[in-house]
Amino acid sequence: QVQLVESGGGLVQAGGSLRLSCAASGRTFSSYRMGWFRQAPGKEREFVAAIRWIGSSTYYADSVKGRFTISGDNAKNTAYLQMNSLKPEDTAVYYCAADLQGTFGYDYWGQGTQVTVSS
Image (tube, rainbow, N blue to C red; front, side, top):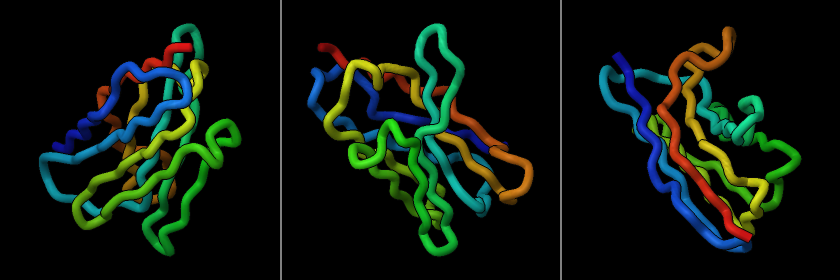
């Protein structure tokens, strides 16, 4: 069984920064990519960023480009999301996820960490 655990969320003022971490526990695995998603109250979960280990390619939602940076270590099954210049609209529960094969979507999800940005 694999568990993903996010940490690093909290309350921050607009313009501030937070760094989210995602760590995997349980059986070892090798993933194709890891990603971050978020869900704001009353809204559907949306894609934020992803890193594909081959070539270390990164992908971002337009709403966070230039402000957020995803990084990680495939060998350690960890991922990070550095969030700068935070805005109130970034307020959401942030989830990390791991995609093992790159074919059928994300296989494992964390429980989420709350990020609240005050104006």
